[in-house]
Length: 404
Ligand SMILES: *Cc1c(COP(=O)(O)O)cnc(C)c1O
Image (cartoon, rainbow, N blue to C red; front, side, top):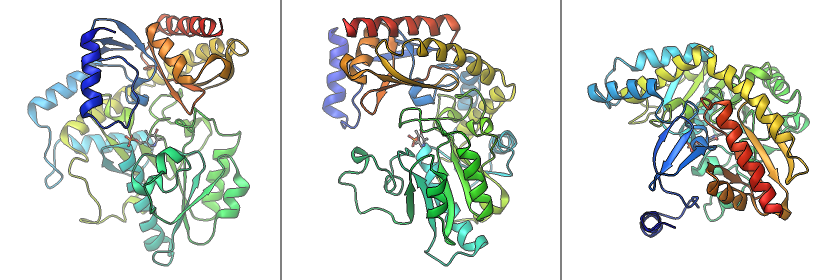
């Protein structure tokens, strides 16, 4: 490896905490679906920062909005009003078909905020006795890294040595409506679900599952919270994956791509009955709703309003699915695909997901493994069909090479 690259990596390994295991490449710039490393090598980005970069690196419109805003006003805190915050929350509420937006920064903050608000709604509106609320969650979930959120993770790596944990969460198998029905009681205030389980390996819900969750939630007066932080904002071919299941949750959780690949922006979006329970001083965030994030977030909503990127994700997604399906039996054991998002299970004899990703890197494609044998593919939605084919050709070569 080039010595500049090695040096940069060594510095990170020495001074940065080792909570990630990055691919051995040092990126210096990005444009559209492409990343460039310190030596000028180019890579197709099939991770998109875990879908934070749905609109492509250095998206010209988003960079223009961000630059203009940055030169004018970046941070105020919500001790005052800013002229970008109102347009952002109105546009996002309309996009979601909801009354109100609670802005935060990272995804996990949106999740935490929704858990708080759901409990508050439970006590103040539904009439659950204080401190008795429970929230139903799915096994195999990923909702972020705070103590409360990992309290209901069943991933050992995410939870080991971090206890004691926050009580009040009831896990059930993902996709099991009977288990949800059995787990519900009078103190249940919410069901928290990823419409598609992303980190678990792009696990699609069984037919009718999300509609069933909606029905159970409605009939028992429980909030359905859809964590669309990774599945939302065009990734699956629609603005929200819930649309494809014909379902409207009570609360959408958004993050990642909401910040346009430029700044962290997340949000809890819901109706006044729920978010209206928050009064001044009861919840907050220094950076939540800041003028820069709000300007970018509003521009993101505008990009989504035309439906063009969703259509592109849908159409190219069909092509992605066809090409991946053709690899089954040729180094791939299973494929799950929706829009421009795929989980590809690699035949163990060919090596781990990580080993395949390292081979892909050598062929100019950046992708990341999840849970051992699975590779997740999630290119920016602005990718062209030719670029998509180029990366899939590389994957085909890598599988053949690993099998040889
Ligand atoms: C990434 C992710 C989160 C957490 O977002 P952070 O910005 O990393 O805190 C929460 N839920 C889902 C479904 C995610 O994919």
